Image 1: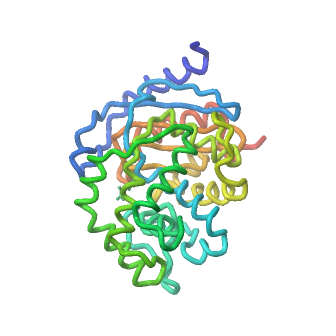
Image 2: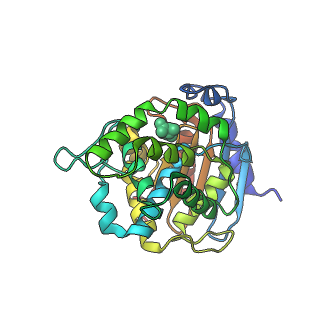
Amino acid sequence: MRTPVHEYLAEIRDSCYYYSQGEVATYIPELAEVDPDQFGIALCTPAGTIYAEGDAENEFTIQSVSKPFVYAMALVERGLQIVDAHVDVEPSGDPYNAMSVDPESGKPSNPMINMGAIVTHCLVGPADATPQERSDLIIESLCKFAGRKLEVNEAVLESEFANRYRNVALASMMRSNGFISIEPDDAVWGYTRQSALNVTARDLSVMAMTLANGGVNPITHERVVPEWVCRQVLSVMTTCGMYDSAGDWLSSVGIPAKSGVGGGIIGSLPGQVGIGTFSPRLDSHGNSVRGVEACERVSRDMGLHIMAMP
Ligand code: GLN
């Protein structure tokens, strides 16, 4: 049934259509060849009602939007103290693929950039898990956040892994600094596989709402992670989720968020809403241009900024 919320989202879709600046990611052909004009948006409520508009059912790879969820899994399995000992929670102001470490400890700055995300990937699963087993555990958990079975985009995985050398350099530094103990190539394969899962804007809204719901999936009602984990993850998303434009995002949109180079963005407002957007053209920070614009609109129109006066 179409509701006023659908009409509102359709109006956002139409107004975002005029934002045609930015470029799709070009580092692998599978991302370079997507239709750049796609735009989808979905909102999920705590009760599990989903309002979706535009290309909200189109699939794309989750990429870095997987990072907060894998950080959540590491926290569940290892606890805050051990995870904190492996990865900082400091905004780096650096791009996502930067060598970004604390100068004294050599720890990665935060789990929302590649370096920290490779470390949190390795913290999941038993120490003797094979790369395949660790990767399967992570994908299983990502599916619980989405409330449905997600598939790996094998072509993207293959292409990204063939171009893995920068991430292998980041993983090698983490191994050298003592924060991972598995082979850099294996760590990067698993990290790349988690990033190559196909999702839709609708899925992202459910995943975002699961975090905003204290860890309970609003559709399946399954508890995926405990509440304290969501608080930790949302805090780090607030300060680090949008890479080197995190400060700009916090002041203009004011919602804990995470973006990925596939064109996806999640926004999670505790107790209120999960937002998923998809549009492939990216700004210079690697954030979806129309996604940022749409989130700014939704935040302004609905008064969602976390610093807004009640
Ligand atoms: N596959 C990309 C990488 O690891 C993901 C980064 C991103 O989405 N920002 O380089």
